[in-house]
Amino acid sequence: MSDGVVDMKIDPSRAKALSAALQSVSERVGTVAGGRNVRIVAVSKLKPAADILALYNETKLLHFGENYAQELMEKAAVLPREIRWHFIGGLQSNKCKPLTSTIPNLFLVSSVDSQKKATQLDKGRAELHSSQPSDSTLTLGPLNIHIQINTSGEESKSGVTPGSEATDLARHVLTSCPHLNLLGLMTIGAIARSKAVKEGEENEDFISLREERDRLEKELGEELKGRKLELSMGMSDDFEGAIEMGSDEVRVGSTIFGARPPKEDFKVKSQVEAGKS
Ligand SMILES: *Cc1c(COP(=O)(O)O)cnc(C)c1O
Image (cartoon, rainbow, N blue to C red):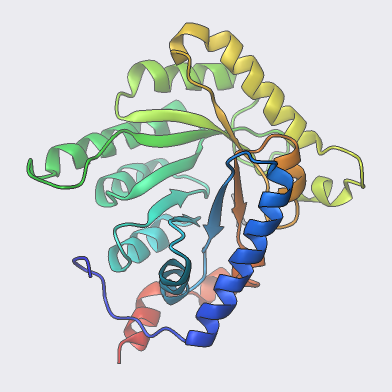
């Protein structure tokens, strides 16, 4: 067991149920992916650390997504270092540095929506680099990021507007953030809209993200050095449609873990304490 990882009680029937739910999502992904590699991120926000450990132990799934900085930092501290954490929630500037500088196995931040936040993430990753012992077995590359695009234009959604705002942010990451790797684009989209999509119709948010990716790849040209940008789109209710429209990553929460409790009822620490025998 890695340093800092505590014993947690895992209920075997819960472990089996989680594993079966993931298996079913994987099969559905496989059916529509047509041989393309689509990453499944299990969104574990507001779910106990023991659920994550159970799913990791049973299935060796590595990719888990969290929405709240404090919750992610607490979970990362007690769970295996092999896990590749994704931060997918609303990002606050003052949380960027602590997130990156304290979680070596943070794999991807999907919700980057300003140059200021990108700069803070870059600084945090640089700090982590310089604090690693030179004989560390952990090889730390740059931190992957997605630029979050507000494809639905709703004020309540975060993300940059498609067009020059997105281009400027992408350029800032490519030229001024040496510890960040621009992996692609992410959208949440209007839930109402995806629910309203009928059989045979395409989701406008997904069309818009794909167009924005094509536009950016063209506009940034040389600066991308031939790299392709991936698309992160699709959640429990619409991941199959998203994959059909070219998604490279789906973020699936409730279909794997079940319905979430209200945020105010959730505490990582007390659950970890209670789980110790
Ligand atoms: C919560 C969340 C998800 C997962 O949502 P489900 O509908 O439970 O699958 C995916 N992406 C983001 C950004 C989220 O906040």
